[in-house]
Length: 161
Image (cartoon, rainbow, N blue to C red; front, side):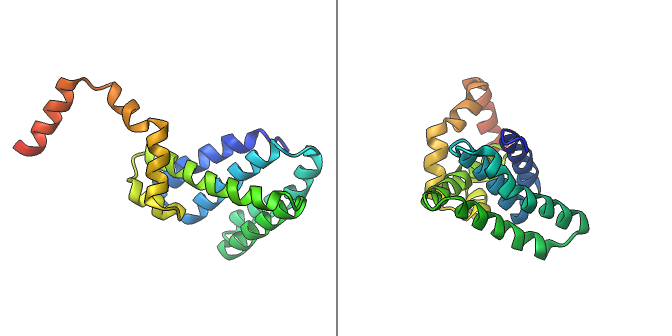
């Protein structure tokens, strides 16, 4: 299992989730991102990979069969397995999951979904998400490409039309 691929898989999943806005895709993206972050701190990466490999394989099988109930139960079990790796990780897992939800909310927002909807999808507060988005500079980056004249034309069209 390539632990470094977790982040890439998470990014692809969040792209799809931002389009369809379904909770299962978001949950998977958060799980995968959490696994990626936790794997960076695990000493025995092979042991870590073995512990989650079987659950990931079963998740894939559930999706192929269209068994959503089993898929959701296995997502829960995956979080439990991550927590069971080491008692020290329980607090870290909670922090990572919380951070991952906010970070993924930012990705959803970057894809054009409102902050309110992104926060609702991920189960985080609007304020927490807005605070993180403000720190990332996403709104400024989007506007840098527009000139003041272009923004003025856009604003005038809003009121004239």
